[in-house]
Length: 250
Image 1 (tube, rainbow, N blue to C red):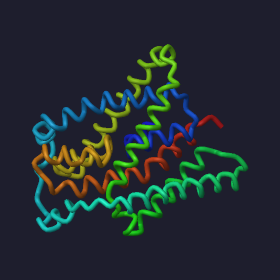
Image 2: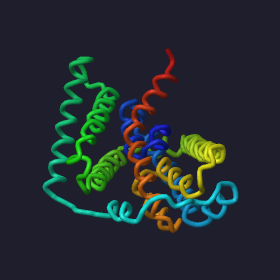
Image 3: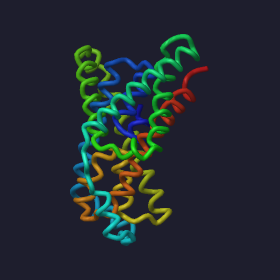
Image 4: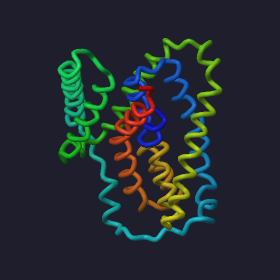
């Protein structure tokens, strides 16, 4: 789950957790630990990160023209297009379920999630689907509904007993991921702003790119940040399931 969330975001964590049939308490606790630790890291990103990381990495060098930036800021919300996106998502779920039944004769959640991810990535290659505005917000809404439903079944006694181990492990994975990112950026001489915005994409996802870019006072890193965030969403499930299956006892 942590491979998924620190490659993509919360949707990947939830999808991998469901696919691996993780206990509800563990799923919620991991999500909570990620939210708390992520909040601390976000506070660092919008305060002293640029100054501190700038001591190690080179400064940003502008290479993007203003018209290109202006094009990324256009927003045209269409309810009809968003409705189409939701219907398409439901259709993809049906196809994924059918694929699982055809392949295994039962509802195997891991297969459904990977099939759904593949169909979503395939649909994104169509410009009309890729450019629909509001799909991210709609997806986050459904995640909140799912989280609320999941939270009503939590066993708090078991959750508190296992909280420290999950929290410490989540902290270890997140900090290690950030340190490795910084070391690779230093080796390849990646500039400070690009390192911070791609780290934001990996730890949080596309939604946090804008606020961090504004704090960096550098709107040119928005496009690479969003690109990394969206690619992370696309490959997060594949990496998460691959690591899980590799580590499972034979």
